[in-house]
Length: 258
Ligand SMILES: [Zn+2]
Image 1: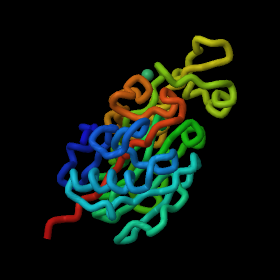
Image 2: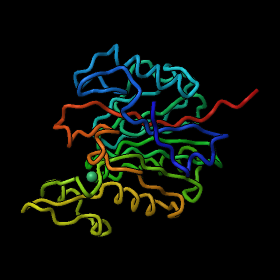
Image 3: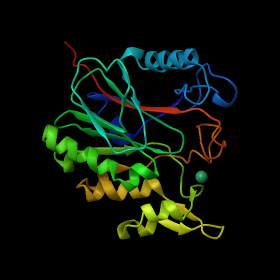
């Protein structure tokens, strides 16, 4: 069992728990080896269930506490105030909650997972930002939901991006660049090695968007490694030609001690 932690969020360990899991420590084999959290790519549902149990129990809670969504590369944000996660995963790419004991989950294999926390209002969020979500400014939408629904102040919100494909490896074509043409992001797009290709820094653009939403630079942290460079540690859709698993990233407000 391996996972990355964000020092920004770990400082609030009394209030919340979080993890960006690596691919190690699960039961899946072959290209899904081994801590895979998606059965949509060909792994068995039994393996995924077992991996959810392993991940949850390693951090002291139950697999039933995971709030999973069906990610659709959109910009919809689910506001969830129930005591339990919904029975069936709903179609969203962002989740915000004030509920304790519910782990907001985002699955990734190159896209940027962003975990949000306002330790003042005790509100958390989790966002899936691929290039489509990034072009739609999904992290800013999640921050707006935290402001509108829970009166969070952007200057109190912490944002930690997890492992994602880096500008070293994320080559895109003109259709993606066209969707990304915003001047404030210009520093995060560089000419690729091949003609008509560009190298995109998705994590950097999401960082700029969070800053534009009002988060101070010190409240924003970028992921520790590139998924495509480190397939020994993480799943990469790009580096593994689409035949791979999905990593889990989550954040949960702790249930206060009685
Ligand atoms: Zn890389």
